[in-house]
Image (tube, rainbow, N blue to C red; front, side):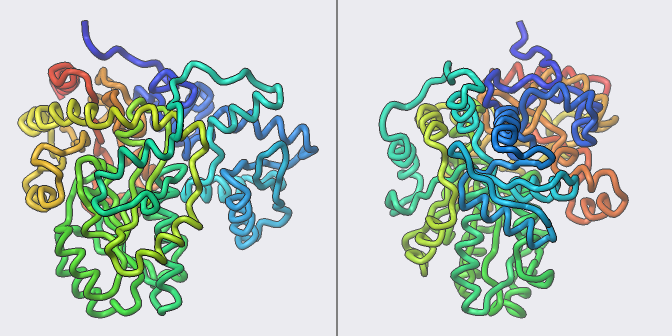
Length: 504
């Protein structure tokens, strides 16, 4: 029997009300999802939580709006009172007349008159900074209001969940104490909190510029573009391998640059810069370096000795069941200004909801075992794809162009994570629609998962000539697929890929 069976459109992956992925089994479904086609969106029972407002959150917002007399207004529920205040300030700065804070039944948010423009602005802000209410908190609030059943059916860590999570993470960050490991409600809030902490430290020193090294995850790019003081403060070095270009930029503008952000490796091209050389450049110019190893995980990559701050999505690999979102900011205690950065991150970060912490603590102890199985299969899958005549290009942690750079920070030669990106000959639609693997957003789960990454992350660019030109300038093919190997047998994953590639 095959390990993989077709998963109907909209089905949560995994089968949990808190699943972080959902099935988009055809390219028509992917396009319909991006274009908000009711025939597609109406069948989604869940989705990646920062992109699709969770059904529990929507139901809670409706119940609270009815209870508190908010007819004719749209209510957005935030992760905290502080986040609600930040959202209100954002809407007001964008001319959002009539927006107002909401507080009721223990929940905080912002309401505004019905307006598609305001709604888009509010949703995008909460998506970028990781400010939505947790789906488990929404579930608990609904139950407390008598508007939903009591939660059940999940295993939780019994005891100090945050302490257990830090106990597992601490060996990955040599020299770091518990106070240096700051937990966030999601990976993007970790990134945003690190960005804010460095900004708060560096702006009084006249340093307001930020450098994006390579092509980063879309919300990280959005943070750098949206929250730097001016367009000239957002700086981009497209080629992560070209540290000479960065060196020339820093020689020209280094005294005004606050920080550099890099992924190790990058998402989705799997490129790894020379991290020790990058760190040396940043230190020479008193620039703070933020490194993000989420694509392969901090269990596989050791970034802290080279960074001021390490940000990591704990949704990936540590939440390997695929039903929890969380993040981490790790402060390098040996770096300059460590104490100030620690205080600033702690003040900025949105803490995880307690039941989310307990769920993550129940899973995180399995991370090494899960990664061992994933990383045993990943080279086999990568080798198969690299040798197949229907595969046009492939990227993974140990690809020749940046293999040496990756191994400088890998915890072992086989510590690759599970991500592989590739393109196929003969057309994306035919391959994707034929493929039996689970298809949806996210990665780093026990379940193998594949998605047409550029379509899901940058659909606006895929569908415009200017966008396609920008993608091409950054080496990104719109038809790039991102595969994350799971714990299923490698031969089953390869078999499914080979079947879909046949005749491509």
